[in-house]
Length: 370
Image 1 (cartoon, helix red, strand yellow):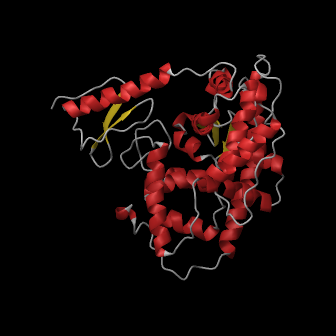
Image 2: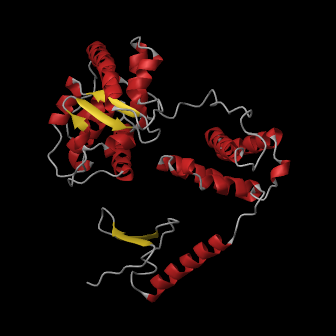
């Protein structure tokens, strides 16, 4: 069978064996059922998408406008060095501001930005509105030294608070939820969850963790979002989880059931399907998230009496110079060893005090359904 390749488009098979196609830069998908791969309709779709992209490139942003400032910021080294997820969020915020991109710089002031912030909260919610504010603050901050704007007019705009009645997006897990999820998860999923539970690593960092980043009894790494170095001791519980990881050839510590490195979207899909099944059974409450495991570690340590600085050190909530030597991180690892010991003891204490569940849970009984 002749393979079809089109410049600028990604053609692949999904996990169900179905062929998919999308434009790499825009993410625009082509329905291969309506326009079969290699057909005249398919190539017509490709040309139509290219035409749209070319038209957008020709549409230049006017100088001396809000859109011009945002465009200039997106070209800075600071923006290019942000985590992929942050850049994606900022782009979505820029899309929200698209209707007012031609606003002249000389009319921009704090009341105007506050009004934009309020309107954003009504249209896209308080959290996204705060992200819009953050983007504008960064845009203005980097525009001032370039002489493009006089002040950071977003700095004094008060961020929106989470509505009192709204639940936290990434609530901590309970001991019971942790035990049920681990007992029911398939081995390759259980290994990933155990790593996040026992380190506080962000899900994306945990999935990308390479085998060569574990030296003896310490995980050495850099947090993807902030660039902060982390040095996490491997405690007995985590080591036991590592020992149970199915053997695979991927360079990452974790792998999918096919022995390949996880993608974030791939693991999220598996996790959502698994979690939804457990919610329907009533064995876990709604609201469990992967990022909630990071909150769980922080909450557990805080309730155990550790101060915020020590918890932040473990979670990599500090932006160090990339030139920091391993010797300084080694000192951090020694301090974190005591932090991890506290986490181990607190989890063990809570587990012993939890009454056995009245529901019968058989380990791995849902493995074939995951």
